[in-house]
Length: 76
View 1 (cartoon, rainbow, N blue to C red):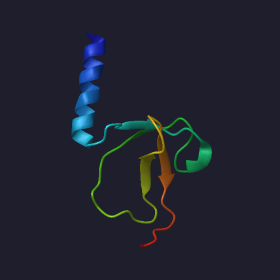
View 2 (view 1 turned 135 degrees about the vertical axis):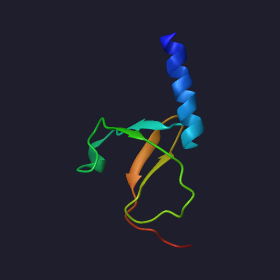
View 3 (view 1 turned 180 degrees about the vertical axis):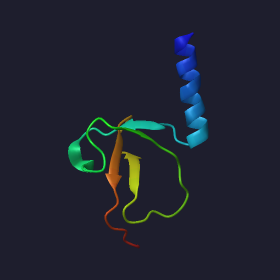
């Protein structure tokens, strides 16, 4: 019953946030002092253009989301 509840909550977060990975963990100290290693981040999808200072998450391979802060936006 607990496992079923956890799965339903996970699927609910996926639907609400619009992200297939709505929860990520900061794996390194590169986000300090804002986020410490091991911090848990809850994500949501934003359709607005990316701006300097925002925190973005992307996948650079299978199943490992990468968390970074935008320091510069270049137009192509």
